[in-house]
Amino acid sequence: MEPKTPPTVDSKFRLVLVAASRAEQLMRGARAKVEAGKRKSTTVAMEEIHQKAVDWGYGPPPPKETAEAEGETAAAEVH
Image 1 (spheres, rainbow, N blue to C red):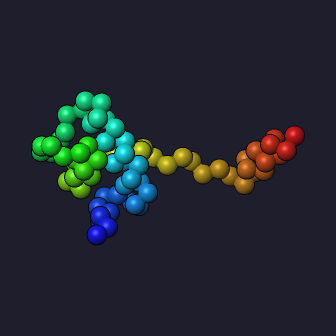
Image 2 (image 1 turned 30 degrees about the vertical axis):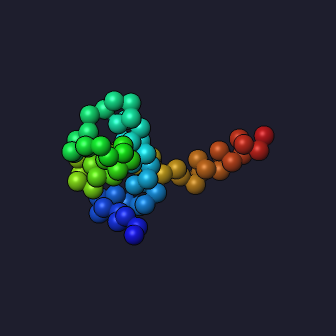
C-alpha cells in the first residue's frame, strides 16, 4: 500500500524530501511533535507531516527571469 500524499504537500517528491529532513532532525535529538513510542524516526516524521505538525514551507518561489536576462546568461556561459 502506497502512502497518500497529504493535500498540504504538492508532490510525492517533496513529501520524501521533507520526511527525510525531519527524520534526520529526530535522529539528531529533536523532540517529536506526535506520540513517538518505539517507532522509527521515518515513521514518526511521516505521521508529523500527515498531521500538519511540522512547517515545511520553502518560502516564495524565485522570481522569473526575463528573456533578455536569460540571453545574457547563456552568452556569458559560452565565453
